[in-house]
Length: 508
Ligand code: MLC
Ligand code: AMP
Image (cartoon, rainbow, N blue to C red; front, side):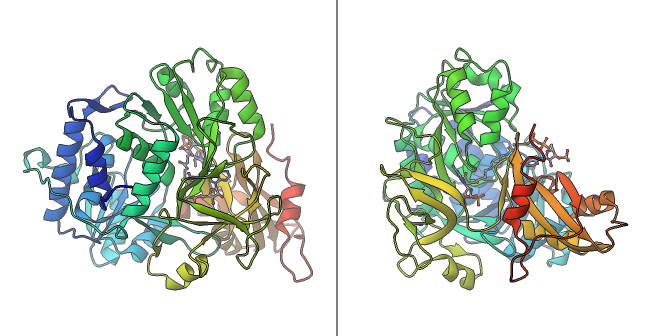
């Protein structure tokens, strides 16, 4: 860890001396140099200042992946504004919640989403709205090329907030996890080091850049090592394979690996130039791990993290990458498997993962109660992930304390979906669960108890209502009507029983 507090300053420090070098290439063949990165970031920082964005202001961004979207993130860091990226799948009602909670000074959206955004912004006292499209156009960029470049980077304190990402944690509505400059710097430094990134690397970047994985982990390692990125707008197995021969590192959620495995082009010669495949954000199935090794000769390196903490553990670059484990705590991060009082358990005993280190969030935005609940007195953060430590110190995750579902690497909170279904005419109650799915790892399904089992409500109507309100990845892949739901003696629905009963529903 260096003395630099502003993450962008730390990135600038790591850039190669030759700024004409290519920093990233898009799938359309556009090459972006480091000098373009610095210049456009500086101009965007100036533009943000002109628009009245000040240090600590939130800049909410729901745009498609592009080099400009990345520069906007860096520009926010540069001026000490808080970058708030949002999944492009979020609907108007979802955005309304985030905007009302975060009160951004500036909202940047795509031209397509802006009518909906403007409507919400009006209700919030006319927050400023600008557009940024995937081709780099939009009102945010108007006249940008002629702006004088601002080169200064705000000197922030290590615990100043750099970014805010919404996550629901175990219960309730989404909370804004405030991530500090120190948190982002320390995590990017440790990963760059542990995974052996150098300026010789070429990272095939196909992840979205509105989450920790694609933005902080992948881009962080590339920026701090000077590795070039092959920047794909989204993950497509065919297109990814087109670029395998040029790349040395690939990062993805397990769904990316199962989709690659489903493609006959994946073999040892296709992956011959690669030195490292990293997986995370959801459990990697042992069968995916083994099939990938058989087909390519590469052993996927699995790591574990979360929005609130960045990365906590990793299998080793050198040494055994143990299947079914997420490796060992990263340097500088203390990890314990604890009972429900926070007391450390012995190896082999199952408890909740608690972590402590410079990587931790500062707290939840304007939510001191949830912040207090999430931390132990001694500073450990309670992740809610249930695990044990094997005799060699490798961490094996066996479940989650909450009934959160991870579908294709996106978290889904059943309560959010159940609340809407339960409000529909003819519905008494519902239980939303995750069941095994060959593509997404887990898929969302809804088990619904209708008021009149002989005449259940129209599932198409329920689906249509859900689609108006929720992002597509949260929409149940199946809805099942039942006469009753299994309950414990307290009257609570036993979801484990439902998960068991429907486990095979979507398997091939
Ligand atoms: C899209 N769909 C999904 C889905 N993604 N359904 C369930 N789960 C998902 N993850 C649905 C859409 O709503 C749509 O439905 C249909 O699939 C086609 O949409 P698409 O956008 O064309 O899908 P596709 O491009 O195939 O996207 C799938 C995916 C994507 C797996 C490539 O979801 C993805 O990139 N996931 C990565 C998520 C990620 O980066 N997670 C990191 C979080 S950070 P319909 O019905 O409209 O057709 C984190 C911390 C850590 O967790 O440790 O890293
Ligand atoms: P998010 O809130 O989107 O950051 O998701 C974080 C959650 O993803 C963690 O709390 C874990 O439940 C899960 N997760 C991340 N990486 C892994 C992994 N390698 N194996 C199992 N679960 C993981």
